[in-house]
Image 1: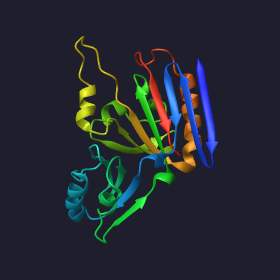
Image 2: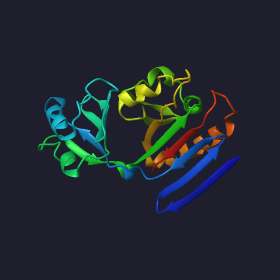
Image 3: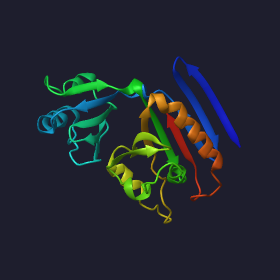
Amino acid sequence: MCNTTQKEAGNVIEAQRTHLGVSVQAEPASKTPTYNLRGNPQWLSDSVSKKLGLELPTTPNQVAANKQARLMWLSPDEWLLEAFEAEAADVEGLLSNRGSLVSVGHGLVKLQISGDQALHLLAAGTSLDLAQELTPGRCLQTRLAQVSVIITAEPADPAELAELAEPDADGHANQTPTITLWVRRSMAHYLWRWFEASLDRLEPGASGSGSASASASA
């Protein structure tokens, strides 16, 4: 059974799609303040520690996160910053007239995929072995269905993510983590259509039992 709801608000599409227990949902990425942070890590490290309580990621594809914010390494002097509960003054205070902090929430789409078939669904669009590559505390920059994306796993806190991998009292695996993607808003419709088609091709129990859900923000 397939259910779809959709509405448009200006240039933002909000939609939800469910199929075989897999749910795909779209919403504006700007709901969470999101920034591109650039600067010299030598002088940014202290500021990030004081303002956000995080250690600045300096290793390729590293993620640092807590309840306040999440920082994802994009290049030696560039990070994607999500400000969950961090005060605007603290985020703006990261820079001391050096580097740049640019709000990018309105230019990105955020997609979330969760459930037992999450990785199976994504495997149709990438050659990466996400089960091996997408480990706790890491992010990836790759192409999904020929579209450039940034991808990481939820919860944002690697400690919480690791707990999901532990079996429960009956020896069964806990709920699989949510996979989060960011993509340019200009490619949101294309990737949404790709997800719709990929969902239609899912088979019951193709990668274990359970459900997956994806949300896209434009």
